[in-house]
Image 1 (spheres, helix red, strand yellow):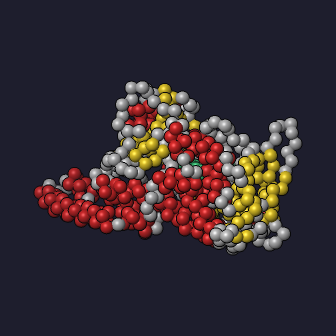
Image 2 (cartoon, rainbow, N blue to C red):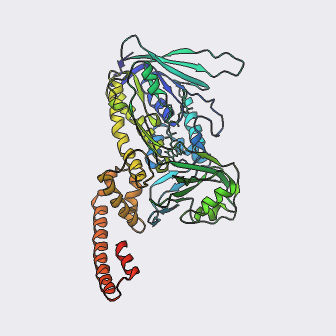
Length: 486
Ligand SMILES: Cc1cc2nc3c(=O)[nH]c(=O)nc-3n(C[C@H](O)[C@H](O)[C@H](O)COP(=O)(O)OP(=O)(O)OC[C@H]3O[C@@H](n4cnc5c(N)ncnc54)[C@H](O)[C@@H]3O)c2cc1C
């Protein structure tokens, strides 16, 4: 099963991918470069149109694909973006065409080269799926459940998986074995892989869950003909620790707005019409409410609560079957508000590409999971670090380093309300085009330090003034308050 091509790439006969959402589609595409045959197994029956399906209920909610994810998508499926644009997905300049109300105020807007596509999630999946299905080495088995992993004759190897077509009610469901040289699990945050491994005698991975107790509520609207806003999308962020409500409005294909309202810890957006509107009205600024209050809703309100950060540490497992890999939400699912899931799944697929290009299949699992863990580390730290700004977040507490990062990032976000240079770096880091360390490059660090010393100086000056005032007006409350703000 384990051969090498003339150019040194790993080659195998048959690879099986479990779960056909975005991570599975991208992984399957990568595997076509290395295997004679790739089978993708998906529990749901795929629709022919861009409608949400049961297996990815999150598809009813805003899905922003970061610019790095967009690049990878295009690399794996050249021309797919053009197809989505032709289907109506708007191209959005993230710095100029998103009205973005950050915890520090409006992000400064300016023309940039950081472009993203704005779409409903089912549209993305439909286009990627169609492209994958055209590949001559790909076989898609939808409407089919994966039941468990099959042990191989050699220890530490899988023989394949046990699958079962989802028959109609009157038909008998007959399970069958599907043999494979490589098995890749992309069944998402509810992956059964830890149980499947346990059944075969492997230790399940250590699992970390950090729960910001977030809830989503979303619905689609027709864009009113007389709408004359100067933005394509709007994002009103929550402002920790007290302001727990936020909202996102994306212009998507079909000349529609997809509106997602987000709340945490007891401030979950409701699913009834008046409650939804009232929640929109209660955000820190009324931009989204003003847009939708007289717009025509075209879908019911859909809600979602499975939003915990969940990390399964397969890279630390004592043993894994050598020909079994996992990526996407199955390994690391994020609080979705930071928009990192799809791009991290895409980075996982590219990590697989690298591993398969460099070496043959022996020891692949360990090598891949270790490398993937490094890729996941930064988005994971960002997600949990931001969630720790809310004391209600369950599952751990912020380290000293995290607290320092909060203060540093507060200043960066503040500067990004009027500095094009800082906002450019911030947006590039947020879109994973540059590593988070870019936020410490001299042009940002210098401005942060300058702002820090200026605020210290004005704080001291205020403090001196306050001393004089409180000296002359003993117990003067406003003066004391000013000093506290410093
Ligand atoms: C509310 C919400 C909003 C989000 N917003 C964003 C966003 O703005 N930007 C972003 O990048 N990410 C976002 N995400 C994350 C994003 O949805 C996922 O990261 C992305 O779908 C990749 O996940 P995946 O393919 O690993 O798993 P999933 O999307 O969960 O897919 C798993 C697939 O496996 C199938 N499956 C499961 N079990 C079996 C089985 N036994 N047999 C066969 N098939 C099976 C399921 O039917 C499904 O198709 C959001 C997530 C949520 C919950």
